[in-house]
Image (cartoon, rainbow, N blue to C red; front, side, top):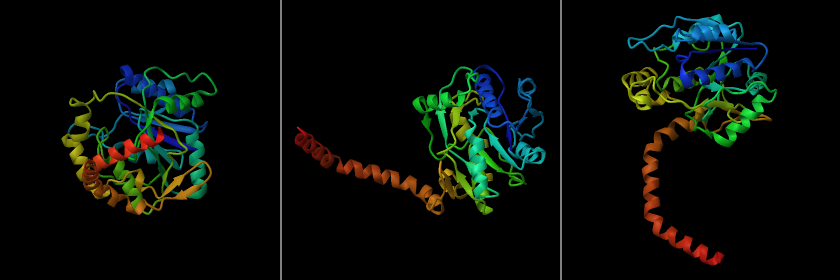
Length: 298
C-alpha cells in the first residue's frame, strides 16, 4: 500500500515520547504499511527492533555532521516495496485517513505529490492507542487544543518512487528543503495535491535544543543559508499555496491560484507595510464609525 520513511532525533526525554507516538500512529495507518527508519541516533536501533521497522543506520552527512536529504530520500525510493512512498517528519502523528486519502488521490492521478498543512499541538505524554477510536480521540484533542499552521507547515510528502533523484546537498533539520520538494514536483509537471482538508497531520510541539542557538539557529544559521542557495533561491521555494489541486471529502478540485502563488509571496513584504500604513491613516475614521455603530445599537 505505502512505504513510510523518516529519520529521527535521539530518543531521549520528550522527543522520545513524541517520536514513539508518531511511529505507533504510522503502524496503524494500514495493515500493509512499511516503515523505514534512517539514522544511528541513540535509541533508533532499539525502537526499530521494538516496532518491527526496517532500520538503516548509515546516512551520509555534510561537513557539519548534518544528515543530507538525499542520503535517505534516494535509498528509501530504491528499497521501498511499494510504488508509493511517504516521507514524514518523525514528530508527526497520522491517522488511518492518510491511507484512504492516498487511495482516493490515486484514483484521480497515477502519479502525484501529496502534501498538507500540519496542526501544532502540545502532547507531552504517550498517546493511548488501546482503544479502537484512538484516532477519533486524537482528532478531537487536536481540533480543541491545536492550531493549524499556514501553508509553510509541510511535514509529509507522498510521492511515487523515482520522483526525487540526484537531489542537491540539502540538509534535514534546517529550513527550505521542504519547499524545494514541492518546486521540484511542479517543475516536472507533476500534480501537487493539497490534502489539508482530509488528512490530520499532528505536529507534537517540541523545543529546538538540538541546535545551540535554538529555533533562531535552525532558521538562520550557515546551513539554512546554504539550503536556500541549493534550493535555487526564493523563486524555487514553493509552499502548499502552489498545489495544483485540493482534495476534499467529496472531490478533487483544481487550484486556480497556483500559478500566481510565487508572485503573491514576492509581493507580501511590500503589501504588508502598505496595509499597516492604511490602517494607521484610517484609524480615526474607523474609530468614529465604531462609536456611531455602538450608539445605534443602543
